[in-house]
Image 1 (cartoon, helix red, strand yellow):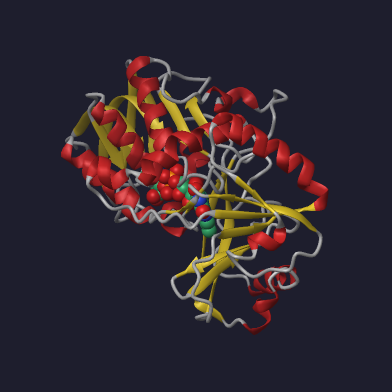
Image 2: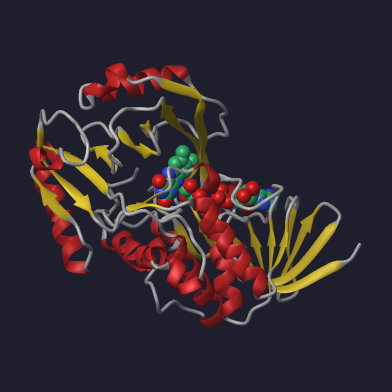
Length: 380
Ligand SMILES: Cc1cc2nc3c(=O)[nH]c(=O)nc-3n(C[C@H](O)[C@H](O)[C@H](O)COP(=O)(O)OP(=O)(O)OC[C@H]3O[C@@H](n4cnc5c(N)ncnc54)[C@H](O)[C@@H]3O)c2cc1C
């Protein structure tokens, strides 16, 4: 049995582990990434709706997007790799009851430099057909859109490998203990020693904490995405969310994907498509999107994955308060794709410099949950 040594062990080769690994290697640190699956992006990263947006209600989240989206938008120019970014936009349909508070968020987005357009409901029909019943207005983010999370994750893996990061697939972390100044990581028969652990294990991050006797309050919730049969409208529908119900829909080639996140469910690695939930989503959404009445469903093309969920549905990015040499980068709910560039740079600066300067992630510190911080409302 041999022990492999590096400055940092990143646990998880999803988009946040891969981004962190590359940013760390760029800072001259030696990095090993341990991944239980056979390839990268096989956890939540490969299961997402792929949306990226600036339309959040709190400054810390808007700022993560304002750092991350320009990187995604210019990824190919910067790094010579296509990550499938398409500026199809996010269209939020806002009921009268939420309009005033929604406009306050838009003011904050504008103040921080986020491009967001305010539309009246009729004007917004140019993007997608919907009933304007009960709606006061809509907002559209022209930078918002989708990327291909597989391509983005694999781009970082590739770039990290060029900087000699070692990726160990089929390597399930089974034990973690402090050793000397750092950590000893056990993965079956293999041993990895390092000064720093980055816990980027997504919905499994709570389990990784538990292996080291640490509380990392992040657990899994199953999220389902449904696929339609081909539809006739050839427009690329933005990722459209009806804020009165939470039901969303967007184009996926000649079809649409749609869903409704159930964040009130119990934690757990529940598997499979739940047809009762599909029916609930269809019944909840059809008043807004009357064309759903004639829409076929492709159940075989529908899928599910796990949100890694923290107590306030926002991520934990930062050192664990009860130990040393341990950074958590997890609990992203439905935002882990869009915020991976900011997460990677923040993780690298925390380890290389002891603090962050490029993006402020203090809001996402571990011990914030007992404090009365503004809680993000646009969780979807
Ligand atoms: C249905 C759905 C829709 C979503 N839509 C969006 C969206 O539109 N936009 C957006 O930004 N986000 C979205 N998300 C959320 C996004 O997918 C996640 O936040 C993001 O993928 C998290 O990436 P990650 O790298 O942190 O975790 P993951 O991609 O889950 O990677 C963690 C990795 O850790 C590995 N791992 C776990 N335990 C161990 C262990 N013991 N040993 C070794 N490896 C281990 C796992 O195998 C996994 O590969 C969605 C998620 C789902 C499920």
